[in-house]
Structure formats: structure tokens, C-alpha cells
Image (tube, helix red, strand yellow):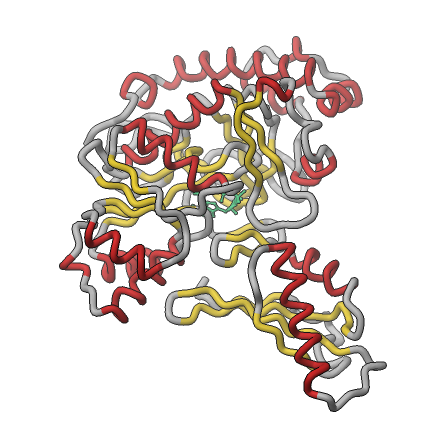
Length: 432
Ligand code: DLL
């Protein structure tokens, strides 16, 4: 099995730690000197960059949260002047104030290296034809993987998301051997292939790299059977960079973290205490090389555990277990991150409905469907169908404009969604 950057990816632990410490000290200095937010936080905690003398000293440093990034919207968390930023992305879904990420030329160089490693670990080489079905745009998925695949020397098809029939056609005609996208898109693609009478045996596809949302074991085996491929999982988060943070090798025994670029910790989300290797908790990431948006102890809200020790593939860097849970109420529908609070905020602004709602998510024929049940106001007394249809349209439009997805709307009578023990706001019928 090839290893893209054998020297770094198979480095001895002690050597890696030395490299990490030097990069951490540079990053801490950069953040302290150039980002007023971090300067203030350090002063409040009474720590200075000079206090970081070992990797463990990271525990002295402040955490960063999504809200900190939103408060600094759009550019306040950047550590370099805008003229040094050459690319800007933002997190998926979400809101008036998404997380905005800026990359310097060096950041982009590192990013391509990291996604190249993740792709190579999954078995992709320059002989592959890589069909990238992530959205190309503000989302980090498309461009992030794209440059890594080019770095590998693969033939890249930047087909982007959607237009599934065309994707199947392209897969047949261009002889795609690797598919990149969300696992739910892969399932949907399989569904469309079946409708079109295209069988996996008639394709050249052999490997898939899936990320951006959880992939359960059941989804993985369904994708593998229906598409006739080896399905690998890769993890990323825009606030920290995008895809390329960690990915599985062909042995699929944990996701290899690019530890020379990211320091990972696991904390107890309640006490914020750092947990030991192997213990499950919230993943916290510190960037070690990023110039544009250095991130100290970013609380991802993703639940996993750290696996240390050499993998049978030869890579020595730490791995994380696949991510299936979060410590907050964020849900991911078709790769888009949604916070129930945002839905509630939208409903607050619409006349004739109450901000009482329930989000129901189903997976139908391989595709996620979001249904939003909304309570009508008590004051709305109408039996005029067209008024209700207008109201449904208004809700759909407003939601689409904020989160980029159009839900199905079911208007229900007032006081039917609020149970005494608190309504269940999200009912996720997709398998766990
Ligand atoms: O989803 C970046 C990405 C793109 C990663 C393409 C991988 C591939 P965000 O929009 O900021 O960034 O969403 C990040 O998605 O905190 C997780 O909750 C979830 N997530 C991402 N990858 C995985 C995965 C991109 N492999 C959020 N398994 C994260 C489970 C994942 N959850």
C-alpha cells in the first residue's frame, strides 16, 4: 500500500512530538500577536506564549468555539491581513453568520498535501479517475479534495453535487474509478443507477471516499454492495480547514489524523477535563501550521476517541474512531449542517405560525428528506386553502434562503407539538 508522505506519515512518535511542539509554539505566538480575541483570552487566563514549553502545556490555553468564530464574523479571527488571504470558504448550511475561513498561499499548499494523503491512504493513485461530487463553492468539500487529488496526479472530474443522472452517465463514459462525496449521496446515486438500469458491474468504480456527515456501518456496507467499491471514511471541519484532517486507510481501522498539522485532544464536554487515549469524548483540534486562521483548541462538538499506536498499514500518527455522535443538537441533512435554533429563529419572524416545531428526517430511496411540522397560531382562523398554501410557501422560501435546503412543511393545529415533558424537536428516522 503506498504512503503519500512516507517520511512524515511513518515518523517516530518522539520525533513527531518535537515537530508538533515547535509548530505549536509558532502557532500560539501567531495567534497571540495577531488575533485580538486570543490576546484578550490569554490575558484573562494569565498565560503567555512563553508558557508553552511542552505539548501538555496546551492545557493552559483557552478553548475556541463556533460562537467565538461567529462573533468574529467575518474576518476578525484572521491572523494575517486580507491581502495575504488567497481563498475564502465557509461552513455548510447555517445562518446569517456562518463560520468564515481564510487561507494563505501556504495554507492551500498544506491543505492539498493533507487531502492528497487522505486520498492516497484510501488507495487512490495517479492512475485513478476521481469524480468529485461535493459542492464546489463556499463549502470546503469540493475544492478541498480537488487540489489533493490533483496533487496526487489523478485525473479529476469536478462534477460537483447534484444532477445525479448526469453523474451516472459521466461515471460510465469517463470511466471514473474513485467517487468522492457524502455517504448519503452515494446511496442516492445507487438508487438512481438502479432506476436507470445501470449495474455496478458495468462501471469502473473501485473506491469511494466519503465524508461531511456520519457514515454508519450499515450505510457503508450498503454503499459497498450497491456500488461494488471499498468505501472509506474521511473527516474534516471547515472552521479548522475542511476535509483532509483525518481519513481511513484501506484497512479501515480508524481515521489517520494528519498530526503534523493538527493536535488532537479529547475532552469531557461537561467538565472540559482532558481525557486519556481511548476514552470517548469531544474532539478538540489545534491547528499547527495554519497561517490565515490559526485555531487553538477548537471544540468540534464531534464525539470520538483517540487510537494511538502504529497501524498495520505502517502509518504511525494517531487515529480517531469514526464519528457518529455530537455533543450538541446539530443535525446534518444531505451534508448540510442545521441547528434547530436557526429554524426556530426563522419561525419567530413569520406571521401566523408559532415557533413550536418538530423536524422529522427520513431517508427515502437513499435521499434525506426533512419535514418540518409547524404549529399554526391560535389567532389564525381560516378554512381558506390558499392561505395555508401561501404560508407553507413562505416558510419553505425563508428556510431555503437561510440553510439552503427546502423542507416539506406540515402545518398542524396549535398546541399539538408541545408535550408536557418538552417536545422532541428532532426526530431522526435514519438509522443510527
Ligand atoms: O463537512 C468538511 C468536509 C467536507 C469534511 C468534505 C469531509 C469531507 P463543515 O461543513 O464545517 O465541514 O461540517 C463539519 O461535519 O463537525 C462533523 O459533525 C461532520 N462531519 C464531517 N466529516 C464527517 C465524518 C465539512 N467523516 C461537521 N463523519 C463536523 C462524521 C462528519 N461526521
